[in-house]
Amino acid sequence: MIRSIDTDLAVHRFLELTPIQGPSGREQEVMKKIVSILVAAGVPEGCLTFDDANTRCPGGGETGNLIVRIPGTMEGSTTLLSAHTDTVPICVGSDPFVDGDWVRNRNPASGLGADDRSGCAAIATAAIELIQSGNAYAPFTLLFCIQEEIGLFGARHLNRETLGKVDRAFNFDGGPVDKLTIGAIGGERMTITVYGIASHAGVSPQSGASAIVMAARAIESLHTRGWLGAIGFDEIGTGTANIGVINGGDATNVITPLVTLRAEARSHDEVMRKRIVAEIKNAFEQAAAATTNEAGKSGRIDFVSRVEYEAFALAEDDDSVLGGEAVVNAVIRASGRTAYKKISNGGLDANWLYRHGIGAVTLGCGQHHIHTIDECLSIPDYLDACRVAYRLIACDDGATG
Image (cartoon, rainbow, N blue to C red; front, top):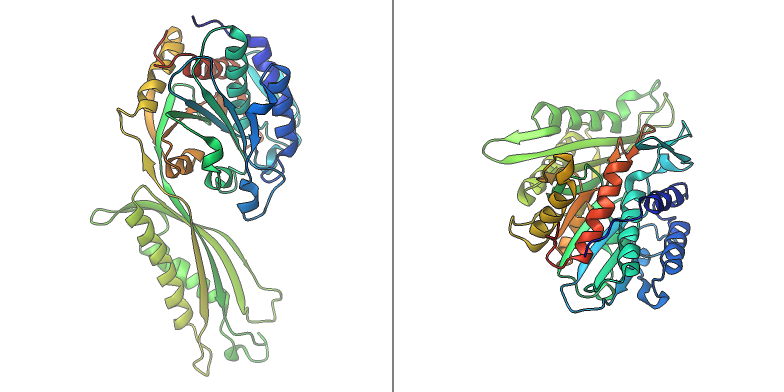
């Protein structure tokens, strides 16, 4: 039998987790609080394990992913619920308070951090409510990931053996509670170093070759030919590209010898994403070669590219899709809404879970205006997310109303 969740405690858990500082790589205090909440509610300490994902992350980090494996009291499929524990830097300093049907932030200089502390609180609430219900339940696992915001590193470097058996999976992250994200785009990031030739800008400018000019020529070429921003060619495909960071130059009287740029390319088609990266690389190579000094010497580039996440899409009849849709519809029926399915243009922990052989549907928790100082949380939607999480682990078929 499905019981009603304790809504006051559910909101309280979010309010406990949200103010804790935990930007990417510094999630240890958040993890400590999650562990204390679970253990105090009756989750056996022996069910909690940290993996060593942080040892494989580029910047290290204070802790690995937290994996909570609950053996269950009856046989059945194993369900995974996941959320990420880190927030973007703007959310450091969050001071949440309840304002009617919303949780808002008293600190005007920071974001709330509902992305994704609401997901963490929702899956913790589901586990606690089910364990304390006295009802029989099948095995389930909670996964609290690190370093999602800076490249999905926790999910990417997850110790799959530690996670154990998973039959269906649900990732609680951003968006409205009635949206099921069943796929996501692939992304690749590039670091481009442009080497020019230094000279005195006033005495002998002709002896130099400006790295800034080389970068500008490459960017102009990409923009003019349609390989920056929204990209769409009928005969090739679609995607996006952006050059988001440019650094270079130390003085106005020096022809700039070095510029570093950071860029990204995205597409739902791996072949198209690789084509976008190739076009960016080629544009910078040509611009560097074409920019010379009076002696005919040209610039050069170093180009480093790394795939952040591959695209994926779950089939409409996937067990996670069918189960998630049934449960979400059961929970939101009273509000007159119906679950709908989308493919995301942003990366998710689900991208890497898919690479680990786990097809996860991403579900919303009621966060609004994430990554901004205006971020807030809809309490009714958050509580529905808690109910959805509870039903997913309480009902093996996910369809009980």
